[in-house]
Image 1 (tube, helix red, strand yellow):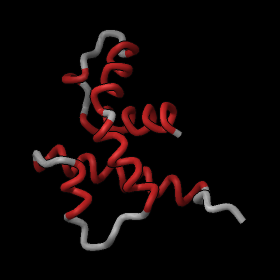
Image 2 (cartoon, helix red, strand yellow):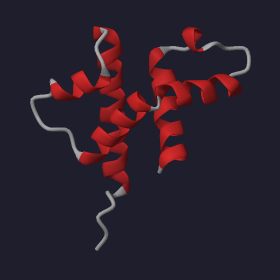
Image 3 (tube, one colour):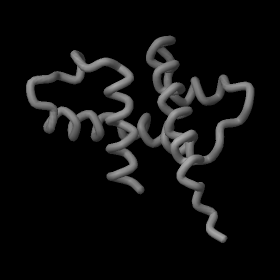
Length: 94
């Protein structure tokens, strides 16, 4: 049996990571701080996604910015941008 999360668990982890990244943005705190403020310990994949997006944000934003035709990162809704960051992180790193 594999240690890899099932597809529904991966989807849930991505959703939790998205919420944590949004919370960090809305509270003007780091994603790591948002993780540490959780009452329940986030699962390993959620933690990996949040920390990965935080640590590689500059690189992710540069890649997204290169492909965003007619949009700047500042114009993008924060949820959309964080979905792109999570997806790009997974493509680059996983």
